[in-house]
Length: 276
Image (cartoon, rainbow, N blue to C red; front, side, top):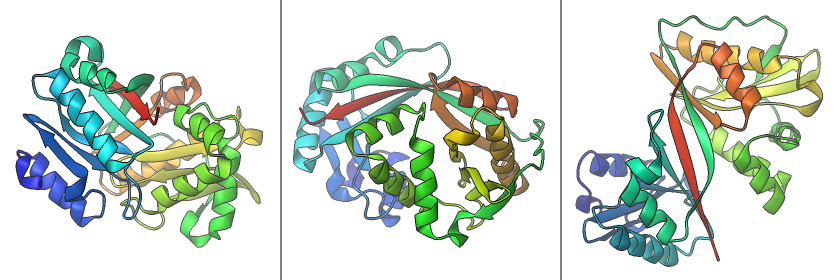
C-alpha cells in the first residue's frame, strides 16, 4: 500500500511503520485521493489522519474519508491543516476543507505554531526550581502530577478528554505519549520548589512537546522557568530549530513562548471527527 503514495510520503510512511506508528492497512486510496492514519507510539490507536492528499475532487476525498473511518472502526480522529500566518483553510485549502466537512469533520480549535531558532537569545532560567527526570520517579507520581495539571487547563484537547474520558484516562495517555517520545532520558523533567512539584516540561527531538503548571502554583511565572529549562536543554543539544504549539485561546502559554524568544510562524486549524 505504501507504494501508492508518492515521495516523500512513501519513505515517511515506511519509517513510521518501522517505528510502529502506522501500518499498511491504515492506508487508503480512492482515485487520486490518499490518506494514512498515524499513532503517536507503538501499540497506540491511531489518533490523527496523516499524509492526506485530497486530490482535485472534494467528493471523492470525502468518500475516501468516510470509507476509511468505517473500515478502521474509529470513534474519534483529528486532522490538522497547518498554514502560514494570514491564510485560512476555506480559501487556501478549499478542497481539503470541503472534503473534511462533507465527511463529518468540524473545525473546533485554532492553534499557534511557534518556533525558536538558533541565534535567538536563550531564555534565562532564574534558578528557582530544581529539576528531576521524570523517568527517575515512580510513574504514579508523574501521573498524579499530570492529573493535577489537567485541572483548569486552557488546552482544548485536555478539556475535552477530561470531560469525556476523565482526568486519569487523559493523564495515562499523556504519560505514555511523553515517555515514548524521541528524547534523551533526562529531558522530560519535573520542576520542584523545595519538595513541592510545580510543573513539568517535556522536550523531544524537535519540540517542546508538553509544558504545564499545577493550579496552586499558577500565576507566579513558573511557566517561564520550565520553558527556559526545556528550550535550553534542546539548544544545548545542538538543535537549530525548536517548535511548539498552543491553542490561540491559551493566552498565558502563548505569551510565555513569546517572552522566551519564540515567534509565531503559522496557525494549525484542528478538525475533529467523532462517531455520530
